[in-house]
Image (tube, rainbow, N blue to C red; front, side, top):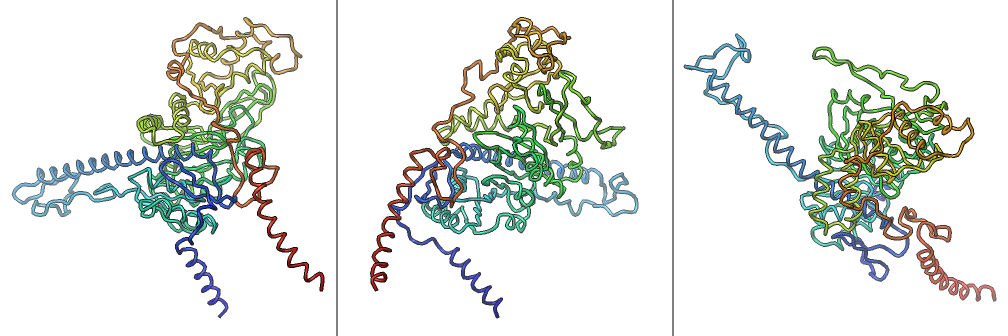
Length: 587
């Protein structure tokens, strides 16, 4: 009987939560408008909201629109291919018969029945045949529901957005906001109280888009997320635990993501590649693999957009996409060690371990030891065709993006990155190692181009340069630069002294190269914008009490306003307590 009663109380609780939200007083809430959506935020820190994530939400909407258009193109191409295949079969069947007799051919061996034309072959049917269903979107961690509401109101082709949260206050807030946003939101957005991991596991391949935007690491959600996405679907994933991903706690990163980070100037790009490698690892367990379309490091987080496919044969290529990283502890030179390789013979392909090691025990440039990190994703992290489509859509409808300036600047920089070059070097880091004045980006880029190599910027760091030139060429260029710009003599055991003691093999040419400026730089397009306001970054987790120690996160004025509000609320109950306690004390 006890178990039955417990079940009843659990059902009653769920029914109460699934009812319409109770009436509320607008005076207790602040109306926040972003894009075409409006939400009601309680003055207390009950449900998480961060204004800085407008960049994240705008970028997600832009990618989602491009995904829908690409999905339509792919469906039409598949439909056309199937129709052509079916028509060829029909033509072959009609040409291969005469007077009701069947001709012997490779397609119809002797002794097997064949069609004599009386019953024409039916066209091939399958997933690609017929009308394409509008996409369904899952927002696994919805909080206030702002993201889900923006998807529903701003991306017209979406059929449904399912918003999940395992916090009662968040679900109530989300439902309140759905009601507040009118009929369109009410018809498309559904809010549920559920554990996202369990929900995704019980809905395999049920969603075309899954959005993970947790407070911290997404690692605990990835295994169920890759199972809930339909073939060719889109996974949008954020990680805000940048201290872990960038090497402050390497052992924690390894336990969460299965990769060891290195503390270099490229640590933010390495963070992107660690997250991609982790998603690929989870997908491989279910004979699936990922194809990154866009990977972004912005503000205080990384955000990756990947498509998920199922193929046991394509999954075998995963070791070719992953590499370990060797980084010198003295001069920060880095080298990549691929995990796997292939050997082709006739039409067969063999998968073998990668050759190694790619470096000796000591750095060939400065003589110091190497740290080893990874494995990381060493394949391209963007699809440049997608990036061009996203950027074109953003520019065409810029009035629909509150953070247009920021996301267009990031996309412009990404569109000019070298897609096949993992990680990058930093001009300031090179100059710091040699204790010399760094050359300007234009001069250094010219020297690399004149040496016969490619070079580009990176959206991660304004001073970062991606190049396919090996590290010995880069140090030769710097040696030639120091010859023209002498430095003070340093201790002979320092890394910079050891590097400069060697004569350059390559004589660098610093003459201005035509391609030393990118198209965006030549047109003076803004690529790296400052934060729009102070304290633009991570915010306090929902439910936590705001105190004076949170000034660095929220700002002095915001903290003072909250504290003053708490003082006013606590004054009245104290007076009431004194009145009730007085008679008791007298008696």
